[in-house]
Length: 236
Image (cartoon, rainbow, N blue to C red; front, side, top):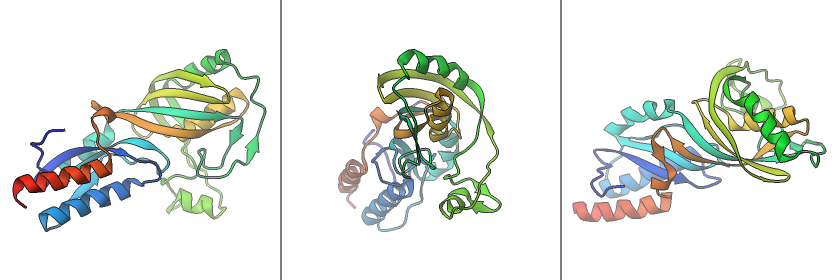
């Protein structure tokens, strides 16, 4: 990140989102920091949300650069995802308690690799009930948390690359390069069903969005420090 950035006028800021932060939390922190040093409210947004339990790259736009955010939201994404075999949850991740346990010890690396082609290329995927998708005019997760039935229709998406990078049973870690709109939680759940043992997403990190990479990102705290230093250079 260059010191030539001008977030008051407009900048793209790459944030390494911590676990348990919402995407809105990150936006709010950057907005508050900008308002503190600029003395006025600056427009801030993000180019593609991350679930609170996920970490990694969140593209933030400020000022006139918020107009570019849809481009980043539409870009392909890359993730490192860890699946926990043998345990299924209603949300398909660790947000909700395990509701089904099945034997997993018979699953070896060969079986894991054998199912990967079924989830590579253009596929149909049903979004999780615990998602922000709307169903009958309501956010699906509101209905799911209330115990109401949710039947979200499947959507077409593309998994460009799906690679097993580590298997330490019962955990399997995958690298996923996919089109926008892909739910890695659903991928974890569906792979568990295909393996016959069930699975949920135990950890998720976004490493890239289009050509932007998390290695070039700063944490929210690092951006706060950068904003203070930038304001000092500007004489604010």
